[in-house]
Length: 422
Ligand SMILES: [Zn+2]
Image (cartoon, rainbow, N blue to C red; front, top):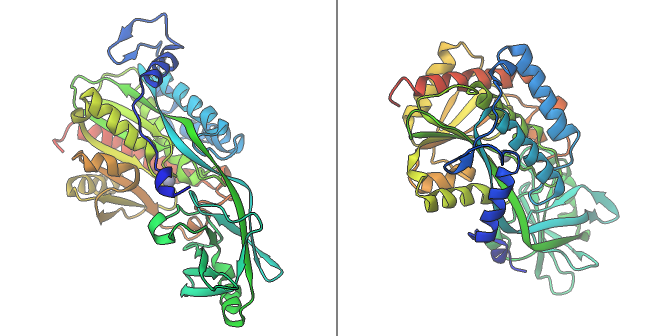
């Protein structure tokens, strides 16, 4: 099936909406309903994260639950659904309103392994997310260089027509990348590791045939949910924090993006029992890894509700633990300046860097609607990036001091944006 058809149908469905309501009201049916949500018995969670020791414990416990005790939280899978349920319950501990934002999408799954052989030698590979599958016997033929060390093509042994692609990871071993329909011309594609480039180059030179084989399944009407929790403020003007809750199909994604998601939950807990000036919403999105479908759906839902305009700014956390240097991606210099100032005032280790570029990925659907905001990523450690989209991206690899620093920076950010007119 062409991958253009894999583009999610971000449909609005009344039955889906009804179900969302039932989900969100299930645990608080006896409590008086507020507009757009329901009142929950909120305990004061501020004291659960009010010291560095407690925050370290909270991080550890949540990483254990969401990563160590879980499989990959690939959108549409039971592991994802369990994870997002846990995240919703965490939000309900501090925020009076928490509700799922569910949608239907076309789900791609790898069935079994990705098999790649150069001659008789097996090489590690991961099918690209959304790629068409190979023929059952695999595609076999000589390899040629498209861009040395970056991109290779497999050619048919008889007709020498192009039959598939191999893309080399930028950071280390093989990773599944998102399939590009136009670039890949509808042919199967898989990711390979940097360490195998010499083997591939040799195969090109001596015409050793390579074989790529994998199967995938498509679920047309897959169901998944983001979750949004809100602390109403004295003003309608809203600040939206978000972090994607899904992972790639081959990893539990501790760095990408669980640790940052947990940081966001800790920030939500700091507002427990308070009435801030602004309304704060914390959004854990689904299906970022397959094309930011959760963020797109949420923007659309808020637009239809007529409340998208309330969002004064968004802050998108994506992988804040790769190193101490936050990367601040926005065209809006005021947020960069504020975060750089905060980092310096608090004497936080690391050098925040302004990336003058419009927010992409989960920030893109908001930015496209004219909502001001920022995407945040990080750099600074050489050993973390090779974990990106890899099975080795596990809980014990999270530098907890970076999570603590990020918590301090963004709690101060929450305080200052309500004082200064950013
Ligand atoms: Zn991510």
